[in-house]
Image (cartoon, rainbow, N blue to C red; front, side):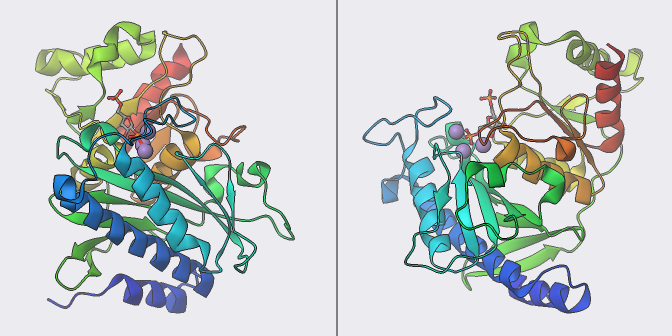
Length: 336
Ligand code: AHG
Ligand code: MN
Ligand code: MN
Ligand code: MN
C-alpha cells in the first residue's frame, strides 16, 4: 500500500486546495517535530528520569502541581517554535502569560497555543497522554503581541491538532479540510498518513464522563446520564457502555476512531465554575477537529467554536463527539 508522509500531505493541500499557506505548513512541521521529541521523552519513562513532579514542585496558573513532563514538553515546544520565523507569540497551559518571540528571531504572522502535556495524572502510570495545539492568525499590523490578540473565537483557528502518546504515537490534524491522522514510524522518524478522512459516526453506544462527580452534576447532565444508564429497558431502548481514560486526548482519539460522547460539565460545587477544561488550548482545538470529522461540540448550550474568549486560561464545560448525542444533551440544557 502506498502511504504518504505528513510533509507530502501538507504540500498537496497547499497545491490543490490552497488551504495551507507555506508559512502555516512549515509551522505545522515544526510543531509535529516537537511532538516527536516529546514522544521520545515520554517513551523513555523512568529510564529518562522524566516521571514524577518537578523538583521545584511548582504550580501552574491553574493551581495544578506541575509534573516533570509538563515542563519538559512545554520547553520542547517553546524551543522548537521560537526561531522558525512563523510565529508572533505562543501561549500555554503551563505559562501564566503569553510568550512573545524573542527579538533575536524574526516575527511571523501566527499565534500558537498549546497544552504541552495532556493527561498529566496518567504520566506515571504508563497510560496514554498527549499534546494539543491550536493555531490562530495574529491580527494584521500587530507590532507587539498581547493576550488580547489571542482572544479570538475558536472558529477562527487556521489549524488544530493533537499527538497522542499511546501504544502508537499518532498525530491528528485539521486545517479546515477534514481530519487526517499520521502514525509515527519510529524507525524512520516520520509521520505517515494512516487515515485521510476521519469521521465520527452520528450515533453511538459509548459515553465518557468522570462519574465520581455525579452528586455535583446539574439536572440536565443527571437526566441525560440516567437515561444512558437505564439501558435497554429505559427511554433510550439500548445499553450504553462507559469509558473514561482521564486524558482528553485519549478519550477524544477513541471518539474519533469509533464514535462516542465526551463530557466534562460545569457542576454545582462552585456556582459559576465553568467546568475544568480550558477553552483556548483544550476545548477549541478539539472542537475544531471534532466538527471537521462530522461531530459536534458545545458547552451544553452553545457551539464551543462561537464562544468569545475573555481570558487566556478560561475554563469551559465540554460536550463533544457523536452529533446526535451532543445535540440531545445540549437540548436538555436549553430546555432547562
Ligand atoms: P491536563 O493534564 O492537561 O491538566 O488535563 C487534564 C484534563 C483532561 O486531559 C482530562 O479529560 C481531565 O483533566 C481529567 O479530569 P479528572 O481527573 O477530573 O477525571
Ligand atoms: Mn494540567
Ligand atoms: Mn489537558
Ligand atoms: Mn496539560
